[in-house]
Image (tube, rainbow, N blue to C red; front, side, top):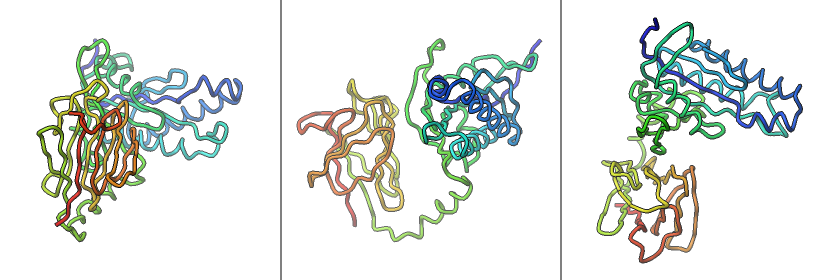
Length: 301
């Protein structure tokens, strides 16, 4: 009989291993993958995790706490991306990592259940260099790690028929804990009553000190709901950070920004500063008379 327990399940695999074999040949590619697996195993064990199995270029591991899982994931990404030997045509080998916390059945040194399936799906949602996780995991993170995740989309899990909110883990910060003092010190900046006024159709939303973050997309849970075939469920968010307004795109089709001075920008799965005034198009170029076009004005007291 298996044992029911809650664990963080993590999958990590080498991106494009087939291409690596084609470019480097079997012997060199096997060395690259073997070293990558060893670094993933070492990171798991250093952060109190257990490697359940390795499958070709992939590692499956479990942790008793989500923090330990993300600490291991961050170490994997840092060490492999910076390792001088793990290079293909001058580019570092990349990992994609997925993690989910929930109930599993532990049996014969293996784990089973929907949590394992969800963790594996998080890996398939990740791109090279990304660590993806779920709301269930984020809810159990320490404040330090919770400050280093961002919601980027909502996905339907195949075979389960349920939607899961996707979060990207910002592992690039060398020491996540060191972020907290800088956040706490934002009160010391010379604030000038910055606010961003967003208007779409007859709806207006302000981003300011009292509401420094909003979500935009076609799903009802967004702060600003905009419907359209090219618009993702959670398409983008806008944040006030250190007296600057940042547009962070989280979508499939990207976001277009046209400033009033004529400057045109496009951002996809990335961020940019917005200032002055202009229009925003979700998934397509903003059109003057479109009900999907957002108009923005940055104001200052």
